[in-house]
Length: 357
Ligand SMILES: Cc1ncc(COP(=O)(O)O)c(C=O)c1O
Image (cartoon, rainbow, N blue to C red; front, side):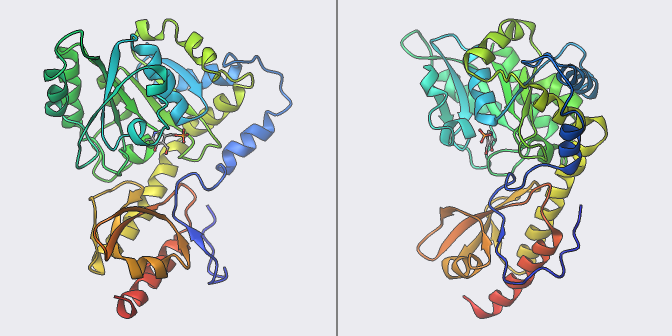
């Protein structure tokens, strides 16, 4: 990665808005280029999808898993959830969960209620889930059947192994399936306080996906299904939802590249390192963070006047308002974030700290 940006003009605006602002890692583009003129079968049955699936199963130490590639996160959530649930069944999620707030009602549009639970840290516990089961007692209500979580979560937190184990056992004991949205799984697994491996995760959930879009791929998510029954008609569901790409090779080639060495983890590690550097320095300057995130999304609390000054040179999202004077912003780093701009942000923040209230 070329981080030699010292000569870049100082007035350039840099984005910490998300982790999909850049294209794709050059290894991936090269692999797409190198294989360009090969003739391959379509719809996920090409050599590269099959090889990538084999490789991912190996990395999961899970030869019985089923792997399917789709192009995006909302699509993965929609297909997984709607193919698992009976018409009268519902999915339980944290109120901050992506399916609850950022998917335009995609799940509800398939006829399934999302049972949202208030969560301060973006995570769900067995106790939270029990609370929903306790109030859904008969056929006059939806029947909760699936628990949706994400790792890292919508607000950058991660599940510790013990937390996922507890949730997983509770689900098993209560006839619930557990689905983990891994749009940012790389960042979650590479966080400095993570104690969960791909292998353990794969053992603890029924379905999950490995996000490529936010971790160096042009696009793509790899859905992993640990249950033969869920997998049985899954390809019909993919096709019916318009997600089975004729040129499925585009996804297989990318995932093969991400997993053939350590690229997937190296890229996520870089994104986290940049975010950790930002949060450490922000805290050292005396600012508070909304949540203690060790992943690639951080949520500092700044005065509105400081936010307005920072936005002259950086783009980011305003996450929420604290009061009339203060707001939370979201800074997201990516696999391609240049350290030069992280350092420049810190330098700018330092000088604004002494001049702006
Ligand atoms: C946790 C999570 N899941 C799913 C998605 C949806 O992904 P897409 O925008 O590719 O549909 C996102 C996107 O931000 C996300 O953060």
